[in-house]
Image (cartoon, rainbow, N blue to C red; front, side, top):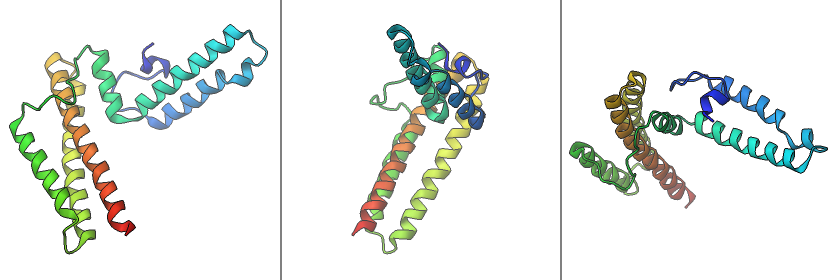
Length: 175
């Protein structure tokens, strides 16, 4: 079942997440185990399966990068393997620069400022790519979908860097 249809949403990237949550709660109530306490074991099993589907759909649609990936999959766009190397040499160079920036944070004279600056850089570049991906997803052509999938890969890289920065910050301020 199409997750957008399950939640009665248009198949588009920008969705009303509060509406999504509201529909999620309604759907979950409709398949809650208490409602099937006196039902047959088959009906109970179906309710559990529906609940699982509703959870999976909600987790996918509420997170923008997962939502984008799901949309591209629905459109038949093959997602590049995350381990495959990027063909974009400029982005490869930028990856190395960003990794060096994170590595240097722990040696900064002012760690707070270094973390803040790294966060600003990552957030700014993520936002720029995010907007570009939104534009490509809205175009809904084969070429645009392929470009959106490449941008999505880059966004996942930035997401990982943000997680690394958060871990580094936790590590540096624990001691």
